[in-house]
Length: 478
Image (cartoon, rainbow, N blue to C red):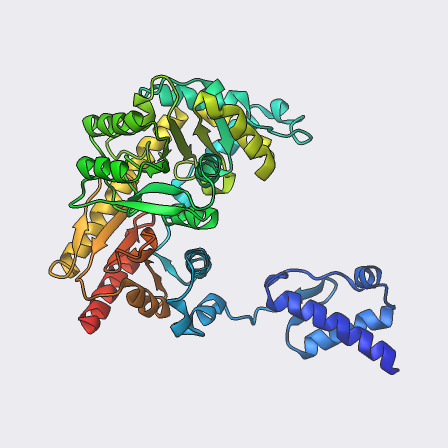
């Protein structure tokens, strides 16, 4: 074999080897045939054969008679853990955006118990019912694949969203709604429209770490409003507004705040809205958990009090109720900002996924299926929170304090002040348990001694063992 041919098959083998190791080709996946490899790399039959001989020698593939070449199951499933443990001393200095990506990537490993990110069991989500609603109307989907869902999005879906919001005293119609890629894009576009780099925004904290990631990317200055004893201090907010007349916008989550579960009373919501109306400051509302009342209540939101539709950007999605994979969210946009919001949507993701929007529209239209699903989902979350709270009270009673929400599926735990929850996170992840350390819920790392626990998974013995593990680790840290 001459040197030129040897170099070529080694080069091709290296390319495929890299694709296997970085999981572009996954375990058990069939690789291109010898003929396909010849076409793809413009090489001879003998070169292609030698590529697969070389990959077998490296123990990366296996050959199945009359079937082909497949990626061998000898890759470590602990790659995210290895990444996590490489440089412990560097984890503290990660930026919010890098830490968030790190947390999400780590928790995606199959051996990790996901008590960190707010995920739900697939069995809780109505994918089969959504698909069935499509099968009943197949003809309406036949011509969709060649179309875009240009902003403001599919009118039928926006109409169904408006109907649900009207049950919550929102005076809105389809003409006030723009569909988005989940609530995160809705929040991003709202802040992007209202601010410029360096502007001040008021933020309720602790709050969803994705919100801090958005603020960080937009380079905004944060004025934090802290919850205290599961309440918001309206007098403090008024004082901050007086001291900071240049605040451009504010972000609040008044129903089942992620992570604390705080829900304001109707009177508090109205007072909060009136306060910002007095100062003519736009409110960006994260209403993602608005339909996750364990008792099935139709809760008002801040948009309920914006009767003239001039101040509140109300952002939400179906990610928590139907499934995050659809990436369908929306923003109720004040009239004077509506056209500018549409242009901004066109400049970012350009269009929604029309098939996904139509699928959800059909599911919402299909009798009371969505309402029945929500009732069942919320009962599951209520049960999970009750059971995991029992585990915590049994094993951590004298160590932590806990907020017990009436909606959503997260628990907020306050640990002893000397505990650094990020250190706790690093120790637990080595043992295949993920939590969300509290400091990622504030721009100023205020909540270092707090953690968020996900209750969207089955509260089985694995979860109880994880709580016992948390207890053991806390005892070592105290």
